[in-house]
Length: 249
Image 1 (cartoon, rainbow, N blue to C red):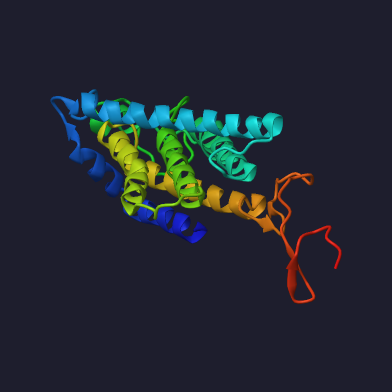
Image 2: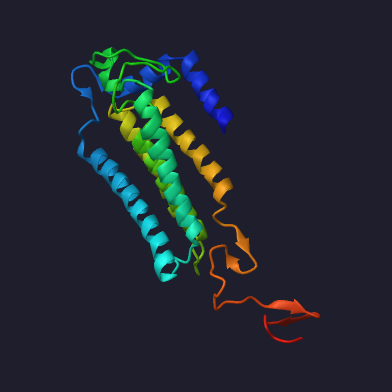
């Protein structure tokens, strides 16, 4: 995936008008970015934002519930919830808001001279002083939407169920970061390269954390965080027959 990130940087560096052209599709010199302030896109944006906050709260409560009450949430191991929480902290929290948006200095589309602002346009790979706070590179809300999508997919694919998985839910979940990305670009808040890089960087963080935390790793006793004194003790084979632990052969 790092190769894809480098390819995106190179594409937008070699063809810088791409960002300006895409943003220009949504810009009217007389009215500005036409989608900015529209009710329906704002409802979608706030819904995704609220859902991300809700997912963080759910993850924290699931970890606390397991620690204090020794109960699982939705039948999922605690490492799943810890993985989701860690991804929110690492990707939107530390990488995006803590580092890139604070120090990269890329001005937002609505702030550059090509779209009625006063700042200069800069390429995604350039670190500049065109913006001093809450800058354009990369897209924070899209990063949160991407983490939300990953979290919902992990939960949906691994929660115990009796009925088969309805794949329409997968389509809806995958559309979440796309809706967020469209709204941010169309409203003049981010360039296309900002949202693409945001999705890719979150994907890299998700993969790295999955390898490190191994949230679905299992042992012979079930989920890795099952306590030693669990009433569930799996049977073991003895002399070709299945016997319970503790039973004499």
